Length: 313
Image 1 (cartoon, rainbow, N blue to C red):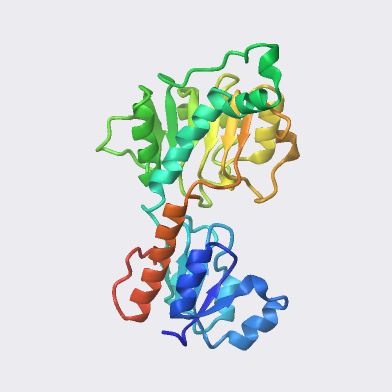
Image 2: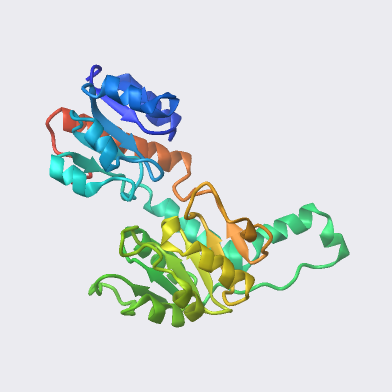
């Protein structure tokens, strides 16, 4: 397989790079200053693309690579891949579900605790020496709060199970009712927000879920409610979020993802009721290596004529 050209779209994991380089002719797209020239010179040798949540394979790239057979995403999200174009051209697509579920769900609970108990502020309070001047302000309890989850897939379900351990009633919204769960279903996100203290975004990003959390949803969640986003940045109307927080219409937000990463609205930086993370939901050594192994195994399966492990298309 050493002669098979694999185009890696951006830096993702040194472990993944090493594993790909051992097996394939690895081409690092981000190192090419003249990308159009590079694609023209390698258009007949590139048979696979490896992307992630920030860089995948759009229609233009797919059209520029006539020998492309498979796109393997180092992510569970697929919004950076033109799935329609892949289906049209018979190009296979894989992602990395399951292996990152636990880490992302863990982080969602961590964000809830960090936001309600003001953990980041507490840390700064001690480091700055302010504790010597008096105790930190009282914060908000997590246990027993109603948790609404947008999207009850693998990650949403894992978050729900963790929140149940904190004696939290679980509500959810999804495209369809889940008959095998006892959680309360709401037919709209607004209804869900009105009946939740904590609203967690955990659904895939599609045209239908872009800005699924808009002004109306934020107002329904209210001045005592908090928003947690471990899905994708564009799930939330970021401009409306800034307004809701600065105007006091929303109680707080904890965000691992943003609409225009790595750019974050500067208006959020000075707010004490906000926790900001640099998209690290799956960012543990163990999980990123497991994701890398899954990418490699899917490519090996494809080029060996075997069944894909996690096929999407």
